[in-house]
Structures are given as C-alpha cells and as structure tokens.
Length: 594
Ligand SMILES: Nc1ncnc2c1ncn2[C@@H]1O[C@H](COP(=O)(O)OP(=O)(O)OP(=O)(O)O)[C@@H](O)[C@H]1O
Image 1 (cartoon, rainbow, N blue to C red):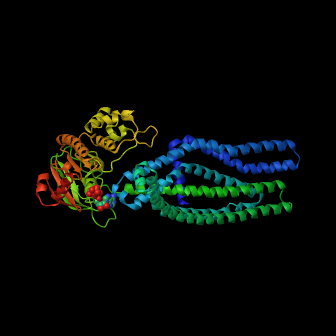
Image 2: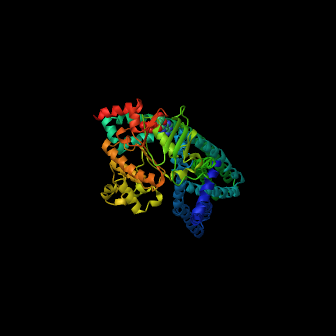
Image 3: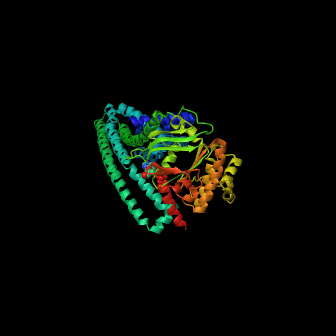
C-alpha cells in the first residue's frame, strides 16, 4: 500500500502546485460523475416502484432523472480528462528531468556501474506510465467515494450487505501480490530489455546499416535479438501467468460474495420483507460494487507501479544528495596557469574492475605546453583524459592544477575551464547553433563568438552551405534535418571545443581517427593555433591523443603510456633517439608511409 500512498501524495501534491484550478475542476467533475452511479440504482428502484404502481407521471420524471444521471456518469469523466491530462504530461516530463539530473549529478563513474544503469533503465521505461497515473489517482478517489456511498445505500436496504466491500479486501491483497510479481520480473529482465533495444537500434538504424549489410550480419543480429527476446518474454510471461492467477483467485472470491448478497435480498423479497424495487436496487448496486472493486484493483496496480517509479526517483535523489562532494565548496581554480598541471602517483580503477587502468602515473604538463599522449589501444589514454577533465576522481594519488588539488575544487568550476573534443564526441541532432554553442552556454546566442569559433575550426564553409545557416537542424531523423559527413561533424565538434575563450586545459582525444593523415594534421594545426592563443592568454595546457606520429611529433612533450604506466616521455627527437617503444612504433609507421 505504501507505493500507492507515495504515488498519490506525489501526484496530487505536484498537481496542486502546478495548476490547482484544473485539479479542483477535474476533482469536482469526477466526484459528480462517480456519485451519479450509485444514485442510478436508487432512481431505478424508485422507477420500478412507480411502474409497478402504474404512476406514469412519477415514472416519466424518474426516467428523465435516470437519463440525466447516466449522462453525468458517462460524460463528466471526459470533461475532467481535459483538465488533468496536461498536468499528467507535465508530471512525466518533470520526473524525466529529475532522472536526467540524477544521471548528470554526482560522480560520472556511477554510469560505469551496471546496477545503477539498470535502475535508470527501469525507471526511465516506467516513467511513461506516470502520464496516466494522475488520472488513476482521481479515479481511485472517485471509486472509494462510490463504494462508500453504494455501501451506505446497500446497508440501509439490508445491514448484512455492509459486508460486501469487506469481501473486496482479499482480492485487493492478491492484486498487490500480483503486481509485485510483475515488477520483480521486469526488474530482473531490465538488462535483457536494454540489450534487446540496443539490438533493435543497431539492426534498424542508418549508421550501422552499411556494415550489417556488407558483413551479412542481419541474421546474426536477428538471432541474437530473438534469443534475448525469448529470455525476456519467458521471464515476463511466467510472471504474467502467476499474476493473472492471483488476480483471478481474488475475483472468483468476490463473485461468490456477490452471489451471496443477491441471494440474501431475493430471500427477503420471497418472504415479503423486501419490495421488488429493493431487489432491483441490490442487483444493480451489487454489480456496481463488483465493477468498482475490480476497477479499483486495476487502478491500485497502476498506482503501485507509479509509486515505485516515484520511490526509485526519490531514492536516487536521496543518494545523490547524500553523496559527499568534497569539492562543492572547495578551493578556487587558478585564473591563469603559472606552473601547470601535475599528476602525482595517480592510480585509477573503474568500479568493479579487478585491476587498475592507470597505475602510479606521475606526470607534469607545463603551463602553455602542447603535450601529446600516445600508446597502444587500451593503454589508458582516454581514461587519463577523463581524470584530467575532472569527470572521474583518481582511486589514489592527486592531480594538481598550479598546486591546487582537483579533489578540492568544485567540479563545475574546473569543467568551466576545460574544453574537450572526445573520441566519441556528441553529435547533437539539434541546430548548428546548439552544436557549437553548447561549448560555452553563455555564448549560445552570441553569433559573433559562434562565427569566430567556426572560423577557428574552418567550419564556416560547412555552415554557409546549409539552407538555414546557424539555425539549420542537423541529423536525418528530422524532416527538415540535414546530415553531415563524419569529417564535417568533427569540424563542428572542433568549433564547439574552440568556443571557450580562456581554457586552462584543451584536450583533443583522438577525434581524428576517421580522417586521413593530411586532414588529421590540418585539424591538429587548427587546434594548436587556438591552443597557442589559450596558452598565451591563460597558460592553458594542450593535450592531444593520437596514434599518428606525424601528428604528435611537433608537440613540446610526448608521453608514451604503456599498460597504465608512463613508459617514456620527451620530445620527438629525444624519444626517437632512445631505443624504446616510441622509436619502435615510429619506425613501423614511417615504413608504412614509405
Ligand atoms: N567505462 C569503462 N568501464 C570499465 N572499463 C573501462 C571503461 N572505459 C575503459 N575501460 C577499460 O580501461 C582500459 C583503458 O581504456 P582507455 O579507453 O583509457 O584506453 P585508450 O588508451 O584510450 O585506448 P584506445 O587507444 O583504444 O582509445 C581498457 O582495458 C578498457 O577496457
């Protein structure tokens, strides 16, 4: 019952705060609509009496009243719907916002925890159900009122009938149990549901279509999808079967109670202690109690589901509030870098991983310098970048920015001075303005600043060719959207990175892997030209990750990572002269270009 109360309190409280006038109008219309139903039985009984007495005038008047009550019962709910459906939509949207806040609040490392992502999937899936939950709450309140009034009327006719709603308690309990069975099955299958959705996306989206067709992988994906689907369906189906059996048992129990009620009043009529009108009243109202109870059980199920979503969101919100953020009120980020960024014995392991990805990394990134990070796949380069950007905290060791420990700095303050183009940079299917402007939200509507960033990234010709220029929506998922080539997306990503005026850390994490060597070199040149400005302005450090030695050779310092440790570092000439990994890999690449 607790989830139901949680849902009702949240939904009514939210509706009251959002639009109390609509809530009051909806409640009033629904109350009248729900009260009409038991009085239909009363008027029908009176009408039967009038008809048996052949009192035509009374019968006609009662028939008209009956019609009015039936119209109220059938229609008022629709008008109430007009009042509350928008509030219901708003509630789903607010909860979705809450979930996004929870996902983006706190430590980003939580997104590497399968337990956390699974809970987020479960809640995000279920949040659509919130849309109809306000309606269910109002309907349930109407039902409770209806059952109360119906019970009083039945009790007046025959006191034994006061027990009829009590007979509804076991079905309610069984329905609750049934709902728990379903919820548990859904939670158990959340990972498979996520996998199934991923397989559908891979199998149907344009971005993966080429490879799937060329490799003839459609059948493999379909087979995997069927496999996951069969597993999920197996679990959910068996839960549905158990749940249906539990609900059916409750309803059979209530049907027996109903039959007993009708027998009681028919017996009274047969013995002359009750009028025929009263038999009509009891048959009509007792049927209503059965409908009311089964509807209320359904509504309770909906509200339990909604309540669980609200509880999950509250729980996650609580965890977020309880998470200690030592940097929230902490040290200030230097305005400009005098010394640089230093990593001291930094070790990092992803949550749940047995071995650290970075192991005792000590490294100096001098102010204003351009540093290249190289190493084999999986050496830990991107992880190091994520730590430097303040997205993850070292498991042990420190990252010092001009002597200030990043752990003591409010993450948002550091993020405001970092600009990055990641390997898997975001392609926002929004306007060009948003794609670039998100790099510095304060400049989202500053066309001059956006223009400068586009020029720095040499992205202006791309935008000039678009029909709506800066306001062109990108992505082929929209009717008026225009899709860009991989290189064009990258160039826009670079413009986004270059929008910030005075970053202390500029990072390019191998976004150029899809480009040829010449284009990659040009991209890095554009980036380093801006980086030099940032270096001169604020002593910003420029860090880029690349596998191409033709690109990294001009860096002031090259750091070679190997198995999560710094293997060697120095200038290109120093490293080529040393008989180690860099010289070996450089020779291999140089041979390939000969
Ligand atoms: N989110 C994550 N959760 C768990 N392990 C991860 C995660 N991201 C990376 N790893 C693991 O950390 C190791 C280092 O990955 P990382 O992406 O830092 O390497 P990299 O040097 O950037 O590789 P590449 O050159 O292929 O981009 C890999 O073994 C990878 O499997």
